Every structure is written in C-alpha cells, then in structure tokens.
Image 1 (cartoon, protein in one colour):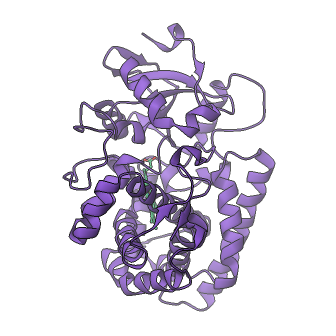
Image 2 (image 1 turned 90 degrees about the vertical axis):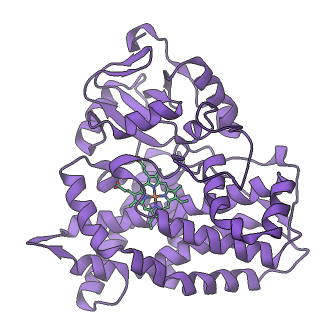
Amino acid sequence: MTGTETAPATFFTPEFFQDPQRYQAELRADAPARQVITPNGFKVWVVSRYEEAKAVLADPTVQKSGARMGEISAKNKVDDSEGRPFADELNQHMLAMDPPDHTRLRRLVTKAFTARRIEQMRPRIEEITAELLGKLTAGDRVDLLDVFAFPLPITVISELLGVDDEDRDTFRVNSNILISSGGAEEVGAAGQWMVAYFMKLIADKRANLGDDLLSALIETSEDDDRFSEQELVSMAFLLLIAGHETTVNLIGNGVLALLTNPDQLERLKADPSLLATAVDEFLRYRSPVNMSTFRFTTEPVVLGDVTIPAEQLVLVGLGSANRDENHFENADQLDITRPVGGHLAFGHGIHYCLGAPLARLEGEIAFRGLLTAFPDMKLAVPASELQWRFSMLMHGLEELPVVL
Ligand code: HEM
C-alpha cells in the first residue's frame, strides 16, 4: 500500500477529539499507518502502533526542520483555505529542528536546565501547591483545571524563567490561543505578543542577571558558542509552552483517570509510595501530547505492509502507541502498579522531552497535595458529559468540575 492508493479520510472530527482512544484503536487494528486529513486540510500519515511509532521517532530520515516543513506542508494541502499545520511562531525552535542545529541548541540548554536546578525547585513547587490548595474548601464545587491544574505549572515555569507575577494571566490567554486550533490571525497575534514580551524580558535580564533559568541561558556558553538573541527568545517561548500546557493535562487527565477508577484511587490513597509509578501510568493512559508530533519523510519509510512515500507529513500517535495491546498488557486499563517501561508520552529519540524530570516532579507533588487535602474529591458531573478540547496539540479537558 502506498500514499497514492489510499484515499485520505477526514479523521479529526469533533467526535474524534471527544473520544480519541476509540478512533485510535480502530486505526491500530487497521494498519500501522494511514493517511488522513487534519481539520485545517493537510494530508498526514498517522502512525498508530507502538513499535512503528518508536521506529519513526528514531529514524533520522524522518525530520521536522522549519523551512522544509513549510514547503512539504504546502504540497500536502488538500484545499486552498488559510492555515498551516502549526503557527510559524511555534516552528522556530529546537523542537522544530534537525541535527546539527538541534544538537547544538540541546547541548547549550542542557547546560542551564540541569537536574540540580530542577531538584532545587522542589520546596518551591510544594509551597505553590500548598498555597493553591489552601485557598480551596472541602465540599466546594470547582473547575479543578482553573483553580489548580493551570496555575500550578504556569507559576512554576514562570518562576523558573523569571517571568513576573502580573504577566501570567496574559501569558495564559496567549498560550491558550497558540495551543487551540484557532484562526491564523489570532494565532499570529498571540505569537507576536509572546515574541515581543520575551525580547523585552531578555533585555531586562541582560542588564540585571538573576538566578533564574533565563539568566542562566543568557550566560551559558560552550567553547565559543552562545545562544543568539533570536534563539533565546525561541527557547524561552518553547520552554514556556512546553512546560505549561502539557503539565496542566497531566494533572487534569490523571485526576480524571483516578476519579473514574475508584479501585486505583483507593490503592493510591492507601499507599502513596505508588505515586511515582502512578504519574507515569497517567501519562501512558491519557497522554497529554496525544497526536501533535508532526514530522515529514525525506525518503520512503517502510512500516510493515505500508510504505509512506518521501515528502509526506507524518503524525506520530504517542497516545495511540501507549494504548497498543501488543506492547502493554491490558492497555486500556489504568494500573498504577504497572512497571514504568517505555511509554512514549515524553516522546523518544533526540527530541525526548527535556522537561520530563520537572513534569514528573510537579505531577508527584500535585497528586500528593490533592489526595492529602481532598481525599473525598468526586466528579461533579458524569464523566460522559465532560468536554475535551478541540486541539491537535493537546489532549485535555475544557473543564474538570469536581466537588472537593
Ligand atoms: C519535548 C511531552 C513537560 C520541555 C517533548 C516531546 C513530548 C513532550 C512528547 C517530544 C515531541 C516530539 O518529539 O515531537 C511532554 C509532556 C509533559 C512535558 C507530556 C508533561 C507532562 C515539559 C516541561 C518542559 C518541557 C515541564 C520544560 C520546562 C520540552 C522541550 C522539548 C520537549 C524543551 C523539546 C526537546 C527537543 O526538541 O530536543 N515534550 N512534555 N516539557 N519538552 Fe516536554
């Protein structure tokens, strides 16, 4: 089977976003990769099974660099509507680069974003968690995303980067626009706001270096190498977006998973030492980055009986791979005692999530805090009434109404 023989079908319908696991299971049963059309009119090959997803992520001929991505995207557009698979503003950073550019930037950022810096955040993350939970009262009905899952990671990543308190709400609004499948104009304006903001912040930091990550990035150098101004803006922007929206949904999707699996919730309450494996199981079970890992083929790629031709867009279904029954036993069941082994929620290969240790730390602290403060928390509406976001980038709820 090749691209020319397959009639692409519209796949990312509102029903898909409401229950992606169901549609992804059908894809996995059907073929290791299938060509479908995105809501904004791009033909993409979705790779749905675990082994193939991992192979594609490790394949150096499957790439993502910004300029060629634009050209290949244009070739794979099926209509003449406006839009790109991603806003350009989201395509200028390390996550949208191939070696050697990616290698260079990743090496530089790793020097500043160290395990030690993350571990130093622990007491502060505990404090922020306690402050947020301290404002809430048992028995109240709240949107847990609004009062907890959003503010925690944005406060953490903002403090890490050195972004001021008073700018956080505007950040939240703009990053939301960038993540949702919004109109090109709106997305462009949000991107420009971010770029302008970071340019100013970097100028301020240059004049007055602090002990935040952005100052460390400014100071970082290796041999004669440093970040350029543009690279600093892009890196700050990437860290903010990647460090914020994803962790929100780790918390939201994880809480939902527990509240709809009471046996697992009881088990975790009885033995909080299971938290570390539980967080990874939440990531596997409902992966926040479900279907947004765009790449393109530079050569034909053979996946079982399917050959993806060269110059095609590829979307690696991380969330789908994480439910592959051929890799995970009882893949559709939440099992917080499952050995953490090779889920793809943080990606795989050279772009493996830089922030995974921070995300795990935040997740662990968030769930421990929540379960201690509100052990009797319940969903305020039946799970079937919850609305999922219409977003190619993130798998997460619009709201998570709970009674604390
Ligand atoms: C890359 C997921 C939290 C920073 C990635 C990728 C995934 C991912 C799947 C690879 C994408 C691809 O290959 O196309 C997640 C999830 C998170 C999370 C599920 C939370 C639960 C964070 C945090 C930060 C962060 C907290 C930073 C503070 C990054 C960066 C990259 C990345 C910088 C790009 C790495 C590269 O291109 O080499 N993340 N992430 N992430 N993530 Fe995360």
